[in-house]
Image 1: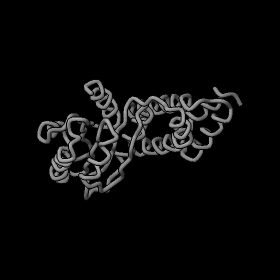
Image 2: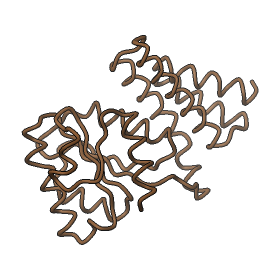
Image 3: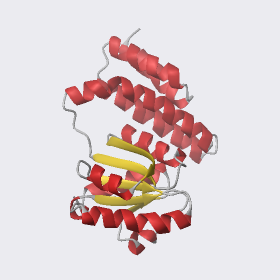
Image 4: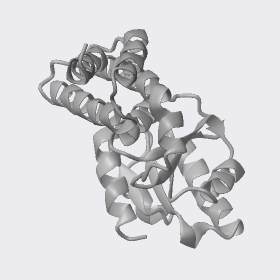
Length: 213
């Protein structure tokens, strides 16, 4: 099949949340002659379409999670090619769920959408200690911290900001907060730089923060 056909099929697989198929179709697209950038563009298109379905209430969060997993599999196929070619990312974002928290659905969605938007994402996982955020900040432009509960956010967000300061990297990195337990006023309360209400908002916020770097 032609590159265009394979990329169209890939977009469809991501929109439908077919994770295994998305990985296979990404490989097929590359074999047909698609570049890593072509695959990335297909991901962007598909994730944007999934976002529109959410806005129209045709999709729910569970559907977006499936789309994110499919996009992640497609991205895994071309990441080595992008890195070997020295691809220009918009920036690097280190994402993690704070210490004591294992709710990572939102973080995974943000990671997928940032990747689709052209960012390099360092996924720190769940239950991330402040010191690990600070270590990741040494190779990132933005650090993103997610908390499921407000009490956890109130405890961990200031500790993360302190760890960044203690490590001497606070003035070199932007700190964005998010998760079900976060709200925009925490940006001021905890000396952060941005707030992501959801995955789409996080992408917009990260792009805006990079303009300040």
